[in-house]
Length: 545
Image (cartoon, rainbow, N blue to C red; front, side, top):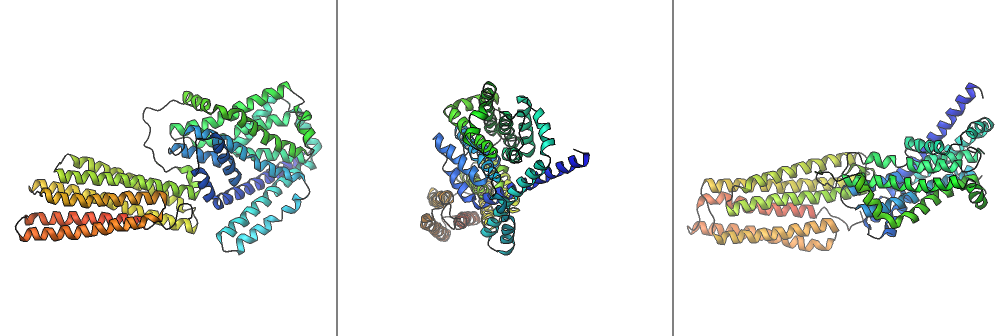
């Protein structure tokens, strides 16, 4: 081959790889957006049963066509405490099985029919340009992505076929199993997709090229791709909590141990490829794809009973930090799936509301008990609420940049909820001022008045509990309970103020107490209003959004 021929070959292979990767990206990102509700439902079924978790991992990856994305999401769930390491281990094994679907699709390029599938690029692009519905647009982009995958594979195969004799001589030289394994791992780490590397090998097989002597050499590369695919999860765990790092390490250990077993098998059985895969499947592309699937299925069957050992080993390698950062439901890994990210924002908003209510409780207790020492605790909780609020808002801004219109409307509701929760923190701050003034001016309230206020606060607590339950369950049957509590709070305010006016007229209460008392009761009513506003942003049952 001349220099110009070599250069042209490299350009065509890289161009084909680029087209293939763009196709995979279009396919993955748009399927993920369309299936995001199903992904949320699948992760919501997380259980302690290992086979169930394997199925969830496999199904999720089959939906979004990327074990990297699934594993990153799993690491994210572990990081925020939604999923434990035992559940994550089984899911990671399932994700490895699900990712082999891409290689199976690529293996279809060996059949003549796939030439006509390339027309899907035109059809898909036209659908995305002409149609207005978001679902149809995304479906069009999925079809376009599928077509691009086959165009990319075709470009790679054609460029290799044109120079097959010269290229074959180069690949015949590469026979060292360790070098082949390293090539597979490094290439996958660079493109961050085992499916992409496997598909390049499949394109080579379609072009009639073989690695080494044509024995097990190709399989050593495939083993390397499985290890290289762990890079994405390892990178995503940087800066995350200890358990998130352990989850990504478990992913690496699983693939390393599985690769080690098959590596030894291939060294001891040099004719494995000829005795098995070539006997069972006529097309070289199918042989490679089926081994990719078989490797992950067999590894899962072998290691699934030992999930506890994987977890224990990860804990030995990565020890517990002395001081972990405070757990938060917000994780950047979730931003790739708007539905999952919104679900996490909802959970973080509930956490924010609990902090704000704790501030209110501390502030109210300081007022009732005339305890000035509770004021610093209240202020500290208010500061914590402010910090969480800022984090949620920043997270929502980043999510909004890549969200559809319905998702943006949901985010807008959540943004409003955060504002209402922060009004609760402001009310807590008001109570500290009432405490200061009542102590400084030596103002006091009778036990009877305190009992009436306590009853009103009790209904506020009932309203808060029902609102949180609604946010978590999306059960609209709770709305009558919420409306009833809110009406009771309004009635309490009216009765308390009316009774206070009567006491003033009868000389039973100091006039100086009026401003504090009326503002205090009005603040309690405002608190109830803000909780009701939050409740009314819940428009549909869980999963129906």
